[in-house]
Length: 164
Length: 189
Image 1 (spheres, rainbow over the protein chains, first blue to last red):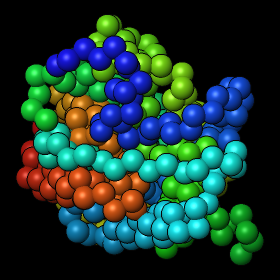
Image 2: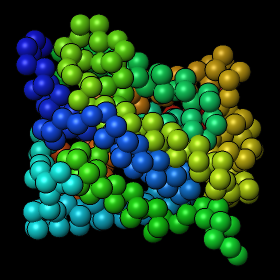
Image 3: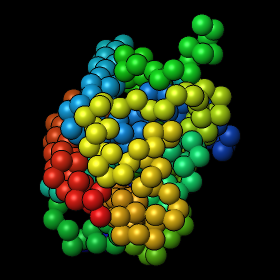
């Protein structure tokens, strides 16, 4: 693959999902608000048992509606919110316009998607729940998290040789 | 029933789903951040071991918000367990319970199956496949796909991105194949 000298382009490229679109720079403590959102999100994760291995097994065996209901209603609320943000041109708390970036299709969404699906069913967790599970006291999941970080690292290493 | 007892029960999908969905506008309005979690794994690589790999050579400090967010999720897990823990075992579909009993999984005290996911089990082939190989697939697959359940299924679909729909369908196909066709063999080990 090509070496990019402008590495910001890389971060903002098609495969970066949590893109920081804000052009403002803030002191570190401005990040505390994301910590707070994370805490609330983590509580919902645990109380709704989204982070439970058992719920994920039920989902992939069509034995429970819980996960489908959660993901489905989350999408409906997210979709409505984005529609409202676009329609009324709602700004951030700093007055910036909210920016959306379209995702470009590449074969990684198929190959990577299937591989992640395998991992999701084995571990009973996507990346978010891994953090929440460790928080619930399941310390052994920190090994799964380190392994997931290693998986990301190996992807970065092999990226140029994988079909995209 | 007082409010604390009420909160201690498992929350139904129609409460949890909309709250998770509200994370999307919350992050956008707080600072133009697109909801996504798996990128945190990339930022950790970039911060700890970039090893001159172009994929990890970027200013991860600009994305530090994402690390605060995932650390918050971990703290949220601890708070939910410490203060709002449900004293009853996790309820599962009787069909699943019958199947799992066949693999020796009978402990429902935790959200993860303690019978197969514990420190000593790491040294067994089954535990290694479940925790280490499984985790590797999660990290490799999400980055290869460009996102996970949050970035593609929730944020991407909320923004009507068809590549996210492709990714979400592939997550589900992979999960169905693994849970029904491959995982039973691993659990029998």
